[in-house]
Image 1 (spheres, rainbow, N blue to C red):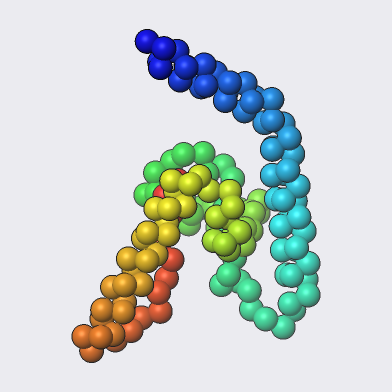
Image 2: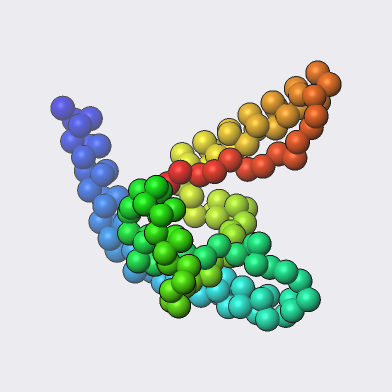
Length: 139
């Protein structure tokens, strides 16, 4: 009985701390996002000779609201003609790893290691080595 009381007390304390520091953490995250957007805009302006269109993914904010992937592919062709589009740069996983939960980060690292091991086994067995690509993360 005492153990369950202690754990419920601990959970409530964590919840109170989370609520107390949430505005501070949100402000820090907003500052980071604003800085990344500023750096991206500067990078796009300075790199006039390079073709960065392949590195930018175009997303319609209205379609991001939780529709299926099949619906997004159908509406993507319709929204290509619309004028309001947002260009998002591809994100570096090393930077995003700071904001991942430990469970997701460990799972990502495990998948990456497994992929590298299978690539090494193919090389040892005489198969063609492919450049290891980071696995997609499902949030």
